[in-house]
Image (tube, rainbow, N blue to C red; front, side, top):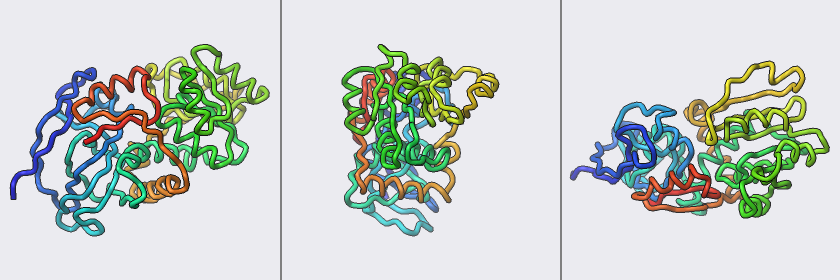
Length: 329
């Protein structure tokens, strides 16, 4: 059988977007418990940037990037049951390797796709949907009437989290960078949009809630935004810190959380703990796809060819994107 070759984006050393190199890689045949996937679309996530820069170190270099993709099964390895050639699948989680035309994948990570879900939709929704599932079903289950503050509400996670929260009866307040993003966020369910460059978001949250504050906040900016979010919370509210795209995470004195504020801070990781748990992952992925079937719609803001992965990273890092960013493979 001829060798399996593929084009893949890899990093040979940490760095900026220029560190992304398009390589031709030879793959081994799928081993026990593995499948060969012909990938069609891959999601571009901020965690890929953290892997690229070395903030989250790669296990060995050169290393692939990308923690979600969708495509078709090309070959199955020994002892694989439940999948055959031609099956449509998607996956989320480690090991990284989504930025490639083909890859070897542990079969346990593959989620069968219904015919109604396109490859692009699957690659746009799975990591972000599973993050929303973790936040709203596990970290702090939502109740009707809850008030949720979502930073970067027009981003890929923000738009999906907004729809998830609204479907559970919550009121959503979203911070956005400009009027165009505000219109997009409102169109997907945000009740109150805040242009954070023009308005003090803490004061705006207090005004929108009659002085009470938010019951839960989704905060992926880091830096001063995380600290200022403390003052936007209701007593017993919870802040979920899920990223640091705007700056490193500050050191926090536990006394800042209470007793005066009486709030909680969580730092949950969908990649480190939620997705590796095979008792959670397949069920949660099925629930995300059920939400899609029921009307949850990921917004695909931009699609780049594989060779332009560096430009996709630049656009995501500089805040030029809305919705999910994909690579077409």
